[in-house]
Length: 95
Image (cartoon, rainbow, N blue to C red; front, side):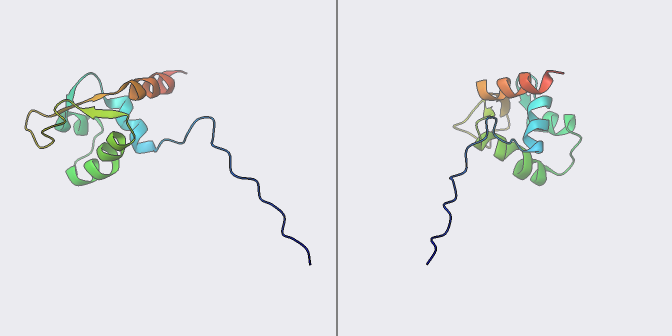
């Protein structure tokens, strides 16, 4: 009886894949921005889709942070890039 060939474990990529939505958000974010201004910069009208597809994944992956993390629903809430987000922005800005 033959033994099945061993499959080598997959290697992590040198540069992890970043969702296109996160890339667009990172490139649009300048300094600290309100959700409405950030959404307008991306030309997105649906708040729910912006939040679910762009903002929450970017926060979860550590590219974006809230200026008032203790009060996520604050009307004064703004968003800014983390060091990881700034590094991605710099990488994407290179020709």
